[in-house]
Length: 263
Image (tube, rainbow, N blue to C red; front, side):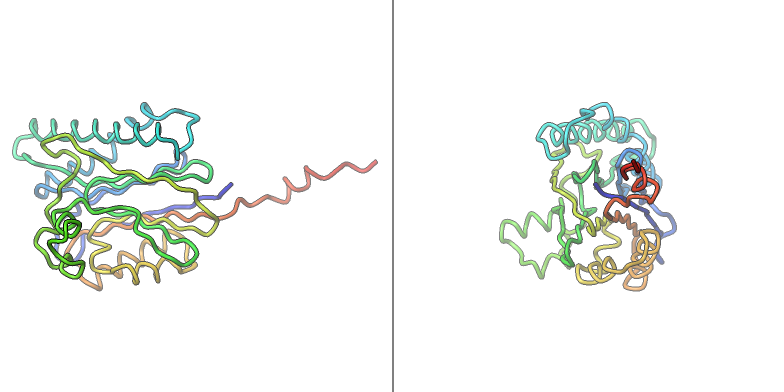
């Protein structure tokens, strides 16, 4: 069993008047998510707000209570909840005057016991720091990523390609979405980072790894990550959500209760 601590921090950056990023930290249900709105200031903020308010109840209706997070059934039902969410945001975009085409990215982590599931749409990312190694758990749903995978551009060209900001999948898109998921077992010392592109783009993997290796609590880690993104660029909203996994601590009282009574 693991003890989980988590926190998030968000900032509009140095060049944006409004923050369209939203996050949710819900340790009671083991749910953590980040959403980055798109489609103009008011539309983007509303879309991201719809993600963090509407997705949790959809998940709780869809998920089996006892199913492990590494089961195919859970993955399918999380994807179904995201598809329903996308339809709701698409409908809201049609009904809201002056907010056509609004949408949002989403990256979420579910935690139960020592298992985790990641699901996402768009270019907000999830990273896992394990044994000092940082792994990106998500694949950007962008035109530049598609061009990279088909060999039309190189990895070095992705960072500067205009297609890096053109999303191919997102919440609220005109057609039905295809979310992606992955599941795995967490270990003591592992750290998860969920973040918007305003954080990971200016920092890069090595800076993220260095920051996450700090012994600071999650609140401080998130603040440091956002500050570093602002120092490196600050041209976009940035959000960091950090989940820290530690061994379950047994209290002295509980240890005492397990001792055999003297004869």
